[in-house]
Amino acid sequence: MITFSHDCPYCKKKNVAFEVGDFGMREQRHSDKDVIAILGTCNNCGGGIVTNVNTSRFRGYRQSESERIQHILEKHHGEKYSLEEILPRREFVFYPQPAKPEIPEYLPRDLEHAFVEAEDLYCLVEENKFIKQAGNSYRAIIELALSKLDNNSQDKNLNQRINQLAEQGKLSPSMKDFAHRIRTLGNGASHALLEFSPQDLEDIRLFTRLFLIYAFTLPAMIPKVES
Figure 1 (cartoon, one colour):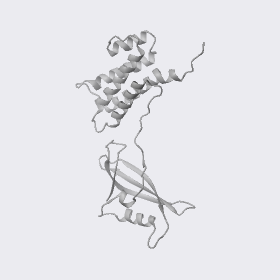
Figure 2: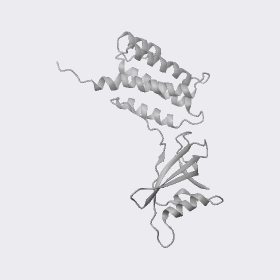
Figure 3: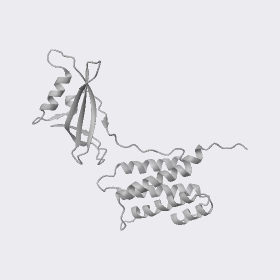
Figure 4: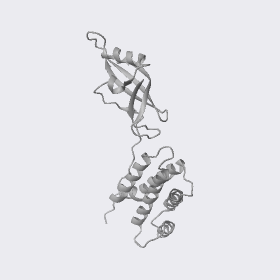
């Protein structure tokens, strides 16, 4: 058995154990090196990741590095190794890599910070844990974003603020629909008795990002016309 620890891009478990399940080796042309592609599977969800390792075919007194590693990968059954033990002093890059949040540009600092926190919480979602907390964080972003578009600082519920901003022409019909969709989905995330599914979380995350792009990113990209 050959194992290593890594953050799983599928179930999002942090530092979970992976087990090497298979490998493939091919010579690099016009070189004295081989490329070994190593497949590992997550012990929690079974998802597979791959890393490519360059090894040398140069023979010393006994066998080359490529031959040594190939032998261990083929004959490891019944023995226990760590990948770092077989390939010391290596930096492994595994694919697929965990998704990195795409932060819309030109957001006010506090809004950008809130979006980064929501994305960090989204990355912690696993096996139906933290789904509502993540969904509620995106709803809070819309509340903050709308408060920045509203010149009236008076406290209002989210439904009222959306409708008033639309009436004032500060929200287009499509942005109004986005905001109400996020509000509706957010209600499910913020109330214990309402259902909020993983697909609801994906939807509210997408709608929130699109709303921020329409409300802040695109207007900032348009050159100002000099009078």
